[in-house]
Length: 142
Image (tube, rainbow, N blue to C red; front, side, top):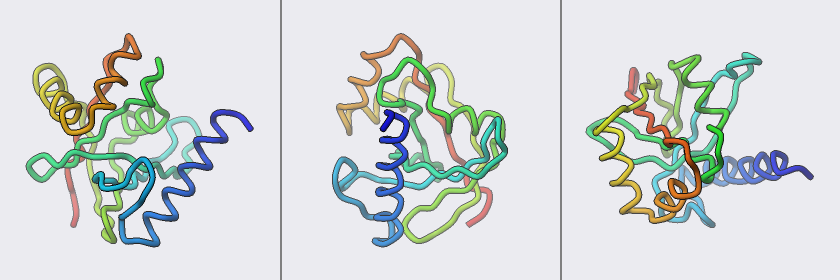
């Protein structure tokens, strides 16, 4: 099993648990705000679903392209930058959203807030030379 296969298998388990429990999951995500991000593949055009922790921000959902501190952005980030209209599942609701990457002080402030709540995010930032993108998902439907 490759590392990518392991990530896909873990994501599939988290997605199934999320849907079975109206957005609640255990393990690494226990007690954390979690959403399911629906994107369209940047290269393939195929639908994709990924779990992501989020930070509520004045009606928006902020997600963080940490990729576990790896040196490359996660595929979902590329998908959103190519196709910024997406959907999220939060609890048992499906919400249409538009993705925008935060920049400068706004990005830095929001990333720092997430790292204060979840110290693992500070470690992700220390493990890579890249700037970890922060994406605002702004609802377009409810």
